[in-house]
Image (cartoon, rainbow, N blue to C red; front, side):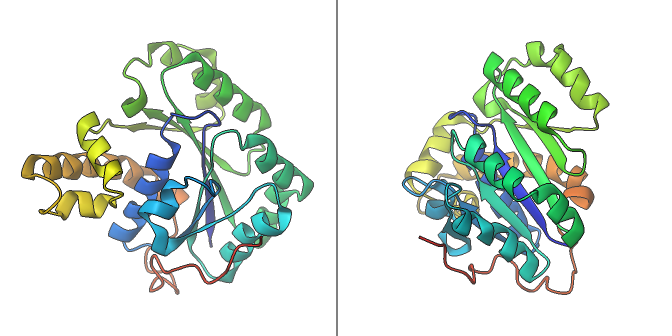
Length: 250
């Protein structure tokens, strides 16, 4: 069974693209079949950092957005969709107009919504919006991104968190990577593998910080892997991180 992973959070600066890149690297390192779509056609991070596995897609054009589902149907794999800021409206227009929740259930496709959160009030309000939309047949994961805030006390004591836990929403903490190290990775447009292993571009301690960050993040993802990701050893698991077999509609 394929899974479609929507990495969102609506507003900019909450770490959506960093997390989408992390998911891509996780699939490569765990040898899980996947492909990716980037909804930011002008400054797409997945296209820059993991271009061999990613194609652009427009949520404003149904013919383009449909490729996400069609790709998931071709063979068992995880499909990662990096949502640009301010894409919630076109995303859910596409989902609602096509009754994607029911279609995915009928076709055996899992849907996972990753809600990236910083420690601001806006993120709590946006999570409330996702809870109100939730159908129950999809997974919702609230990700406290400590790279975008260190004080989640208000969220931890909020009715939104209590409601999320009661509704079975999954929670994940994404540790912070040292800011100067992350900036260097970004400036080099390096994959996280390259950042952890490229001796010519990254110093020993910088590489070590990336490795420690990946290890901690992977430990959190591993705890949810059986529910959210393609099962290792599936019949098409040899197609790990292959380039996309389709071209996006214009």
